[in-house]
Image (tube, rainbow, N blue to C red):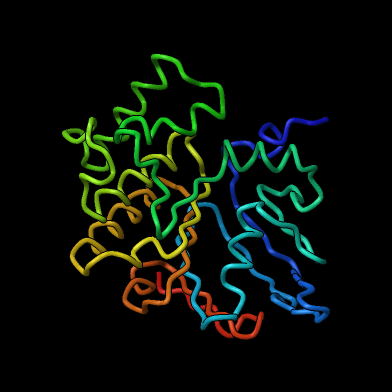
Length: 238
């Protein structure tokens, strides 16, 4: 089996969604969550996805994160059609090349800041002194170098989200997916988190975030709006 990480590489982490459809069968009825979605994501793009409830935002994010497969159509990362990869290959890509940031932070309450950042190392088998130093550097990068021994309950919402962002960077992903990353935060903390994400984008990482807030979307380079599983608009600001 070819190594998906070698296939995808680090230099090119563009993405292409081609005529993607996703259907679910619920209670004997077929729900068409996505209906022929097509768009390109150049390496380093910073995109927000908007739409009302049921528009297909979460479904699309799950497909982009290799958490699900399309019913039809293709999803390419770095030129390779990952929708045809095996489950093991997809798991490898999720673990080592895609970073996830969630609205609810998903931190482990019994672990410290540093230990939460280190969690991906347990799954990748990279618990080495060098990897720990990297985690310490990431904690500093997100402004939590003085909170390493704190538990999540001792942190503000913004600090918890910073831990989640640092954790998402442990395996140096080029592709970061954020699901309502500022949904639980006040306006001041929202600006701080968006500034942090913007800095990651300027480093050349591809970032796609789902949001229902227009002021959040306006901080990204481009906004894709979904309605009834289709792209209603695709606007680039810069």
